[in-house]
Length: 465
Ligand code: UGA
Image (cartoon, rainbow, N blue to C red):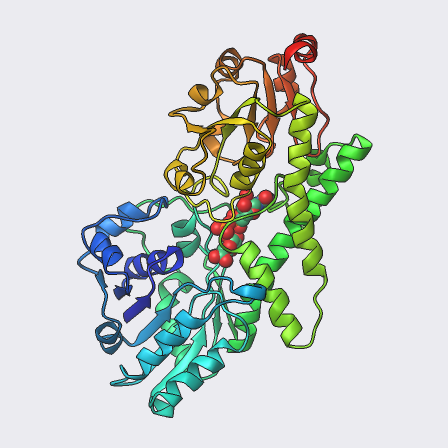
């Protein structure tokens, strides 16, 4: 099928390349001409596993890049809207980009078109798109508007797209449903044959379930899904805090909770809270949507309060480990909002670093992918960037783990201990086993587990850390 994907951010770009991988002819459209030129030449503006290889496979053949929405829409049967829906004042989503795409699409109707929302949008957005198109002269029977929310995660976006648990299509007409079924058929009938090896996520459902709903329900599914996942994280963070109060171990508690198949073990990793371009924004937008629709969804306030507290609790942990903070030299591992991405938007790691800088600390940071982006938001004088975790640790009073990169979990602990001035690790992502850290002579502080006080370290720490 001929498909246009409007917007080449994380969701749009991954969707465009993956639709090409499924056998469709795709035009990826973005009004940022510089970005379009970059993509045309094969450069990718984001760090996303498997995307460069997949783009190299399909670029110039099944997927092309353009800055002309009009031409792309005219040439396509289905047009996916994947433009940004940033947070506006008051928490609601700013839908002005969606509106301007809808306005332009009205003038591009040369045959029946299926317009599909892929961006995360509030309930009723499909109605607004329809109204805007009608107002701008699109004939009523010449298009449908559907919702097809995307559930991919940054860092594993390609695998999430190609091996989804489920595909949700929110449609209000049989014609729209038939087209969307056709687009996803290679996945739902199991005939998709990958053009290259993309590691599937853990236990994907094969073939994925196709869930057909109304457009309204699909819009709500996306917001409710992100809100539920954020709630799961805040819940386990609250439980981890309780574990610290009573001396229980959150790992054991998680095993016990996650072993219940009604709950499941995923998204039960406590830490310094969730971040990224989705959860904080979507939670605020969902809260607002609910309020506007007459329901006061107060539970969501507590989810975001717990999340904000988590950063401050971590700062207290650092203080407890080091006593005073002014002038302390700290190594920071991780700046991205999670491992596997270069994205620092709403990164809890950045927020913690900002607090430490304010306290007068000197920060030596390392991140495998996010340092360039971090430099733009952390231009502070007391901040430097290292070329490896060991270089960051060199001569520091303590090491802080702020992002869950896999490579951090496999560091050479003896080398780390030798590089640090004091073997003190404050781990905001629970990457290490406290017993192992104790055996290597570290003082180790993590989330929801007992602190480890290294005997050698304790005397050193009380003297000079
Ligand atoms: C999230 C959702 O997981 C996707 O399903 C959704 O499509 C996407 O938002 C979106 O709306 O576009 P993403 O923001 O890429 O994906 O990242 P997640 O893997 O969900 O992580 C979000 C945050 O939660 C990160 O800061 C991560 O470190 C944190 N997290 C995650 C935890 O603190 N604990 C966990 O157990 C899991």
